[in-house]
Image (tube, rainbow, N blue to C red):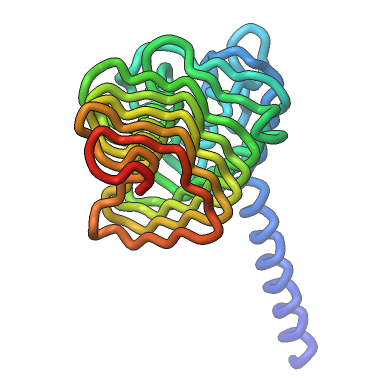
Length: 264
Ligand SMILES: [Ca+2]
Ligand SMILES: [Ca+2]
């Protein structure tokens, strides 16, 4: 009798163990991007990052797969420039800004090597939902010519978490929209060892970064040469009073504004 119980326990443990393995392999995937084209996945959610015809894995296809799958996923980018193309308007990542709506890490090879570059009008990256880390890459050339849209480089909403480490956000620009580089609303934004430079909010606030509520931490980073023009405030950073913000070991220089607060 005692012996039989023991056997049952072993089987039970075995089940627990295989369930754990099943969990990690099924719900958490790593996609290695091998193409610089900007084409969406042929069948999002089948676990295979692949565009039609060539079967290549693009950044957009990898994000669509990650959005469709449960659990935290990882996307590995190689050295080179990834053009972001297409019209603004969808929030489901088919074109225009890259729309992220699930837990995700995007890992580049270094801010000087892996570059996301917007082509034509529009934003670079839209964080709709989730806990997202951007590591070792550059977000650049977002251009929101349509008036009143926020966050030309990164638009972060949905109350999730966004972490940037060893990231450069540069040359992004909004027209009458807040947050030329980054717009963050309601979530937790952590920026470490990164550079936010040469972004512009025209006739709006927060040339580099605009924070509306939520937690904000800036550590070991540089915020420089950003502008808020035409009466806008916070050339470098604009944070509304309710924001819980800490800035440590960071450099905030040469930012300009038409209104109040050149740096912060
Ligand atoms: Ca697929
Ligand atoms: Ca989009």
